Length: 303
Image (cartoon, rainbow, N blue to C red; front, side):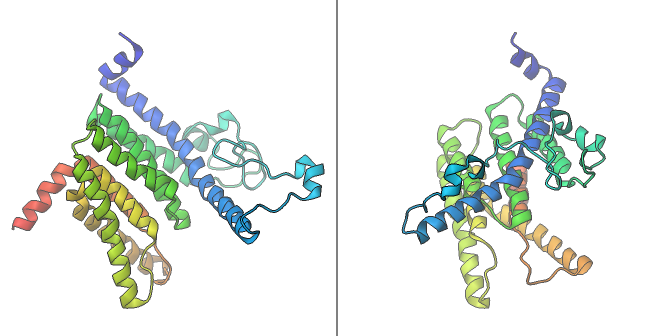
């Protein structure tokens, strides 16, 4: 019996491995959440420079050619090493253990004592728990692996949207195509290829239509185009049949949160509230409890 066979054959060990995997992935997701918007912004600046310079990059300044230290340093998901944004202290391996390091450091930088955002342990914990939930729900099956991918991408997209009101295409579009591909392969899913394709089309068109109706009536943009793509991705994973439930759940939670913010904290009504986190949460609920949700709203309609 191999190590993998031993892990999958022992429920508590399988759950423990899933939890630890989720915590580690959650730590990496924090890197994605922080760096991806910056990487995209830098890419947009380069594209604008190319456009303004007639489609070619401007020549490198002589000072940069003679002094390599002045060349723009690489910045991606792997380099440079993570560091404190206040003092530049590089995060050591012992300071980067999911959850435990934040608790041991009491939420402060080991060098300058600046506060470390609560986002980091929360993302790690939430990712770990959802990864564990998928392992317990789907067991030793391809669906568990696919569910992990869905969970991890939706968490990254939701938190990025919450912080920046941006839903990157680099997350939403591959997620949509992955859902269609899995349906086409027919492995680890109950969604047919037809339902996945229709889910992606309907998911995009529903919010696109609402966007234009709202804009024509009010002259304002009610949501961003990233929301269309995210719902298209969710539709590809859960099928078009669950899209009404996803839209209803996300709208309900979004309305409750928005009203609460306005009443409790004096949130400006003209300040946009990201819709992506609510779509992501509703999409995961539909993925985990799709059959139960379908039975519920079909029974509700029949009443």
